[in-house]
Length: 221
Image (cartoon, rainbow, N blue to C red; front, side, top):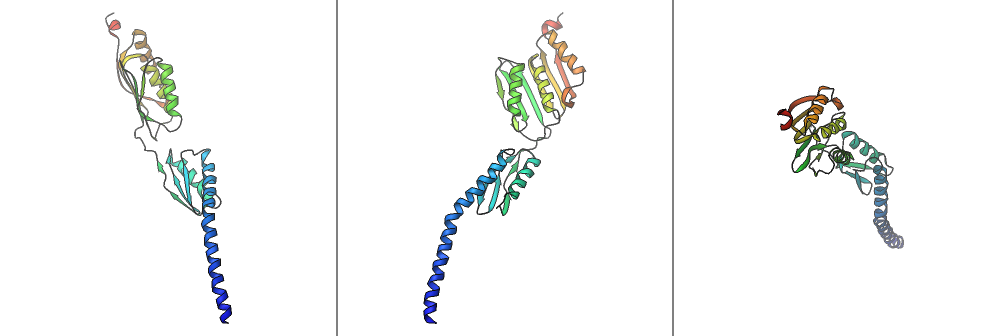
């Protein structure tokens, strides 16, 4: 019986050590494989999100553009085979209430401020500004946020086109409210801006404060 004990305990200890070493060496590859699998699944529609895995526990990170996007990313993470627990360390983009977009035109150029939606919205607005006012320096101070109203891009494009008809001034979209102030570049632009404001505004826009001045040459006629 004594012989059996002297053989048994060293064998148990050796087996335990080998098992621990195997787990230690295999943990890294398993972690990396799960991380790669989840990140590949997220990349197609949730590029904002990233995952870190420790063992089989996953941490979701990033700044989600919407509550729906966050819920979708969490669903993908939780349904990935091999993941045991998902910790949500992701946050949401700040909500702008009201969501605003401001075009300020001066002798120094064009200043775009206020908010811009997540994604390629910034590039689209900058391209529209360059098209509406070619050759004019454009300064971008827009902050990414949630909460843009339906039809935001239509109303923002309208604001850029009307700003192009000013020598100086400001056009603001605040939620769905559209305001404009400044001096028209010439008599034709003055009439064009006013005529457009008498029609239904694009993007569900509602008229706000209108302080448009005719150019000095027009008012003297």
